[in-house]
Length: 256
Image (cartoon, rainbow, N blue to C red; front, side):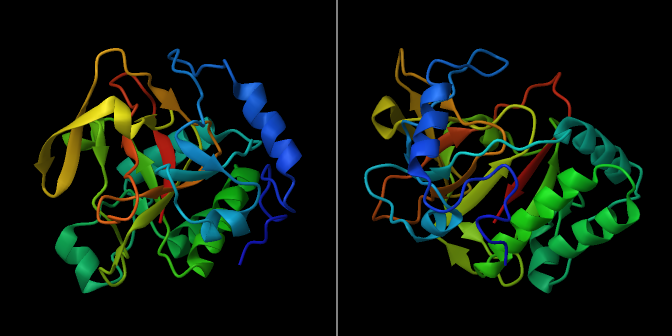
């Protein structure tokens, strides 16, 4: 299990003043496409313990802001190349995974461990990712590192939507929340529930239309958050969509 202090670039020990300083420092900042870095849609916490234990209230996400050191863009390009050359592939470890067709670019913790042991470069970056995966596995989840590029075949991720649930990729069990961190490239866009209206459901995924003039926000690379899914009827779902565009390079997303 990864401790709070073991998360490089992360924050531990209930240091809420440092959290506030980082959030305030991002006030008015924008990402590379001009979207404001915004924590208004999330409850901000100061440790991994709080991230996993805090209850959803009036917001659809709980977030631990982090700033990570390293060349995650370089690692994403390296891993993406190895995936497409067949040198790196996710292992389907259960019949359920095979039935739902988990993509070869979705990597489990053992696959990432083997890759880190065989790769001379990007040791710091891979250690960061593995510590995050260890933490999520300690919660009983099945973490997956997704080497993501624009040729993903599910166009629902490009529309404002709420995930219906998070599956356990070993058993198929459903969870009412999802953990995510994006290590590089553009981070998921999000909007408040009151700024969106439902449109339709596609394969059980609720999609939305943003109201005219609705503000759009994003989180920061390295932030780790827990978002409410649509099946969790006790809380408002986290309305979000992919920020990836055609000319973007590959990016690394960890989910559980």
